[in-house]
Amino acid sequence: MTYCVGLMLNEGMVLLSDTRTNAGLDNISTYRKMFTFEDPGERVIVIMTAGSLSISQTTLARLREAIEDPDATPDTSIMLAPTLLKVADIVGGMLAAVRGEIDEKLSAMQGASCSMIVAGQRKGGAMRMFLIYPEGNYIEATEDAPFLQIGEHKYGKPILDRVVKPSTSLLDAQKAVLLSMDSTLRSNLSVGMPLDLCVIERDACRVTQKRRIEAGDEAFRAMSEAWSVALRDGFSRIKV
Amino acid sequence: MTYCVGLMLNEGMVLLSDTRTNAGLDNISTYRKMFTFEDPGERVIVIMTAGSLSISQTTLARLREAIEDPDATPDTSIMLAPTLLKVADIVGGMLAAVRGEIDEKLSAMQGASCSMIVAGQRKGGAMRMFLIYPEGNYIEATEDAPFLQIGEHKYGKPILDRVVKPSTSLLDAQKAVLLSMDSTLRSNLSVGMPLDLCVIERDACRVTQKRRIEAGDEAFRAMSEAWSVALRDGFSRIKV
Image 1 (tube, helix red, strand yellow):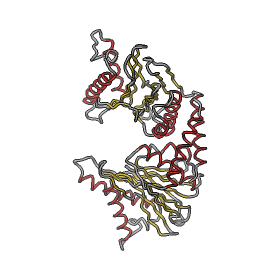
Image 2: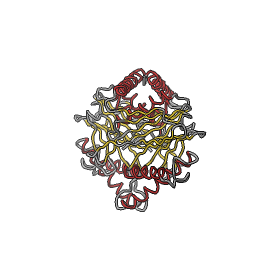
Image 3: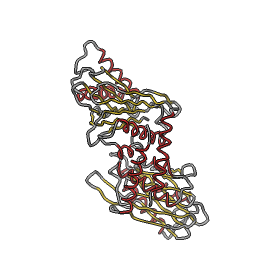
Image 4: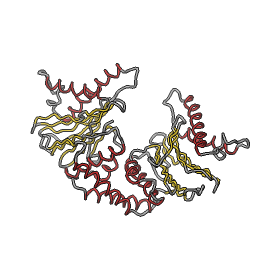
């Protein structure tokens, strides 16, 4: 399983993904689930994936091929698409096409599926963030719903529901997604370190911060411990 | 959807269920999901249900019929069964049988299913708590896993993972299940008030406390609010 979360805030966007992939409990690997496409200052797009690795890898490979194709057009390349909405459209169409092909091969088995978060901004445009469903359709983050999640999303939702608002600072937002991930890591073994964290400041049109948090990361461990203490303290102070 | 949780602790057992049942978003009702079978001082059994109402109602009705049957035997009546393990066996068998019948009628549609938590103690025996799967098989709560959940269980798991141990007091346990439910209520509209709370003290072999918490309950609202404040305070004190 996977857990990926993206916040869209007034100051910018914060994205976090885990890296665990498994095909059965005895075949565990680390795969990047966060992919960055950047023309710094002009356009930045980050894609996070959850679900079948065969589908997400093929989809990402074809998106890259389309970008590098000398005949690329605004209808085929996410780096040329005139709007972020068009980017979501291209990614959704590619995802649905790949899923269709792979589903056909797997028809005897349970079908494979994959969902994605696509976030980005092009120069002169607004920041936008989309959740793309396995069928290729999508929904968008809004003021009222400033975060999107894919994969094993339920364990980490209560903390986001309580602390994330569009006015949340980028520093607090990083704390929120890391604590949301921490709750998920504790409750579900199939989500695992290391983590990929990415921050995109509003109107920078580039990745302003990118960090891989390894399993032994001291700051993450300290934050996780502090949160446990805060929860237990808060719990013990509440009267029934 | 539903959320039910049961804790098995050194001092006794604490059980909590919501009451919302829906068949589509415009057909919402309140149904009891917690059922008590009691021969005070001799035997107490509490059953909580999640899933298809048609299956859980029929299963409960048949369990009651079997108890009232003048020819009831220790193999058919949960009030005569010699052990709690046998109780879990009878409930599991009945659940699987009812599910089989209803599944047959629904074969054209998606099958219906239902899971249950069965908790209790008979005089001279130990407290035991089982989670019964739709297929009728079951697992048991242990020292290492002192709680069981059915239904929409993920939102409310992180708080339980962090604060519940076998040594937790019954008062703290009530607080823990109520806060676990509160997180679920906030994150999933299909779980709803009122709530049924039940406490069984060790070796009492009776329900020692039973409470329905209505939508406007002032104490629950205050606890929920205090928890939100504690979470936000804890969050703001943590350094990234």
